[in-house]
Length: 234
Image (cartoon, rainbow, N blue to C red):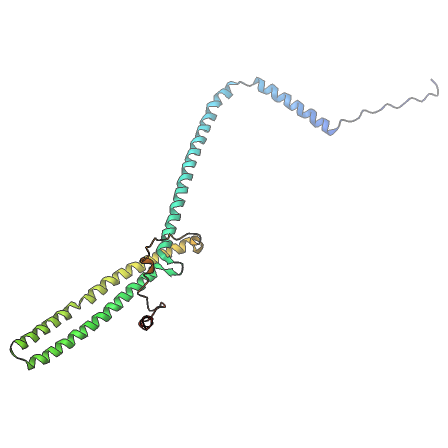
């Protein structure tokens, strides 16, 4: 019709990107289903035993891991027990080192033995000298009795050799204890200072008499003198 305006054709709406991706995904799934349906299923049947072997291997490894865990726990318990024993060997009381205290005690034994031996030797020599002078003034049976005294004095002098023997043996024990103390200190250093902080020292059971026995005191320790003890009876 002359003079009539024709409407412009409406262009088609372009496909949305999301719809395009959705369509592509559906097409890919379809192709995958087709490929799977055409695949020989015998391949999956042959693969099943391999998966079972792997599963059995995993089970075996889990059992071994459980055994290892149990052994590690037992080893950890043994280490804790060892730490407790080492701390008990080192400390008798919170402020008293057991091994160091033992070496101090043995050193005092050597010192007192030496002092006692010197006193006995000096007294025996004095007795022998007095008996010699007395023998020169006596005769007969009296002089013979004095010579017996001299022989006994000589026997005392010879017996005082015990000091050298006991000192040598105690010194050997002292070296062994000090060597042990050094080894324990080395172990203590390897584990670190904090490794023993939460370790409880085993408490030794003592009867009522043992709990009262703390002497004799060492020179470095506070103790009552003989004068203090005598004053209690004044």
